[in-house]
Image 1 (cartoon, helix red, strand yellow):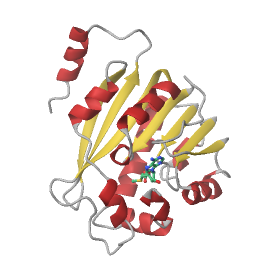
Image 2 (cartoon, helix red, strand yellow):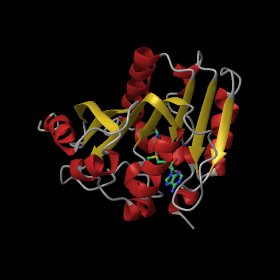
Image 3 (cartoon, helix red, strand yellow):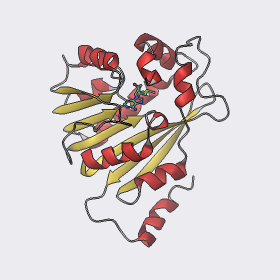
Image 4 (tube, helix red, strand yellow):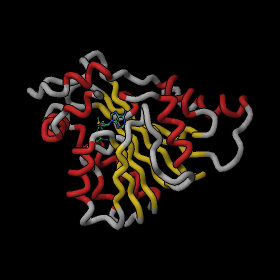
Length: 224
Ligand SMILES: C[S@@+](CC[C@H](N)C(=O)[O-])C[C@H]1O[C@@H](n2cnc3c(N)ncnc32)[C@H](O)[C@@H]1O
């Protein structure tokens, strides 16, 4: 059983919006920025949880909410189905099952604090499959900066998920994105608890991958 199935949604939201964590508000804001940049018709959110940021999708035609936890998806649907054009919950454990989203259909794929818990090979295979050429993948990763994975907010039910979390390095992200998901910038946010969040953008190439030399040039941008 994946420990994410055992975390009560109210505990998750309480922890993430605690004043020392403050992550829900920032992730919501980043989602809003990406929507304002791309005006997507089709959005997919991997690790959608209870739908943080979904208020930004009111102008999209279709929104896919992907998560393994059926309770989170039910809450997401209760909250956002009334205001969205078409909200499709996709319950899947990405480590074991395919994600039922039509290939080459997604304009904007939001992936916030998700890669730390999943098989990167499988996740990126799914991103490649569902993103349309020219579509944007927005990834947010956490950097603990030696503060421990889960901050002490009094919520103890999140401890089991900390045990399966692993920090995703820039190098691992680069390797899994190359060659066809092209790095398009990143931004680092310092959080009140000493952790950082880093948001990365990748664009799915419309053309066949470039030569190795060209790819190497793209990645020089990563040196921050
Ligand atoms: C840290 S939360 C994501 C936070 C959310 N994106 C936000 O903005 O608040 C991670 C989410 O990924 C989901 N998840 C973890 N492992 C998964 C897997 N193998 N397949 C599908 N969903 C998974 C969890 O159920 C949880 O909702």
